[in-house]
Length: 193
Image 1 (cartoon, rainbow, N blue to C red):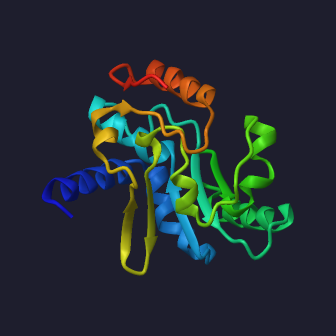
Image 2 (cartoon, rainbow, N blue to C red):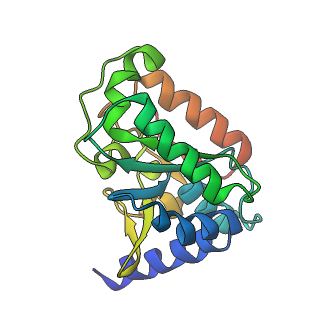
């Protein structure tokens, strides 16, 4: 890892941990005993944007996404068991925390977004499919401590620059997200689809 990449990773963790919701999730979710899990989406990149724009941690974040991967049981009941356990574990945290099994996404994606999805092979495979490169970032905690996952690097996140990631999300999803995010973070730029 280059010095710049290490500095960006440290700054990202500082921004994320400044949000008490993220800190609680990263501290408590290991107790669920999930094989692979990541705090991702707006909880990560939007807290970086808040740091860059000088806004309070947690500003503008609608929900906190926890992705996990368990392909041993793709039933809704199995996922709901994990969701309920997370609800019990994090019930005192004043935020909407969405826990989802990414092994199940292909079962409902086409109905929600109008395009089919192949099954993901891991939770990080799902992170790789966000509509913008700046959104493809996640943090987890395991026995070695905190780890950052950023398949496109962190430069776009800190530059507050959205670029399309055409792997899965349709054009409309990217454009809707760019418009929503620009309304909350005015210095955000976005490249056209």
